[in-house]
Amino acid sequence: MRNLQTVAKQKDILLVCKADEKLSVMADENMILSVLHNLVNNAIKYSHQGTNIHVETKKVAEFVQISVIDTGIGICLKTGKNYSGTISIYLIRELQVNREQALG
Image (cartoon, rainbow, N blue to C red):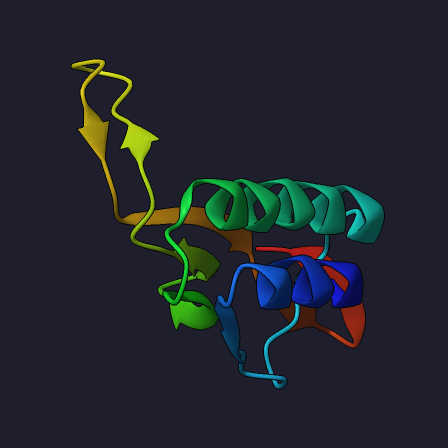
């Protein structure tokens, strides 16, 4: 993500990360990083100069929500019209069951 900071800085875009480091998930780290990299890269690409992009995590029921929030141009899949807003990924949280790791 550090290389994305450089790209964002070139467009005068501030990347703001608000992550709860206590949250954990059972997931393929490389795949999650790849998805996040693509989402943030697109947010930078389509955001206007001088704006902010927020990457946030939070617990939602038994999931961890990772959100990329920007004001750039997006395309609504249902209508095909432009929009800006939030894209979120939901991951199943890691649960401790009898001292063994399990997906919940």
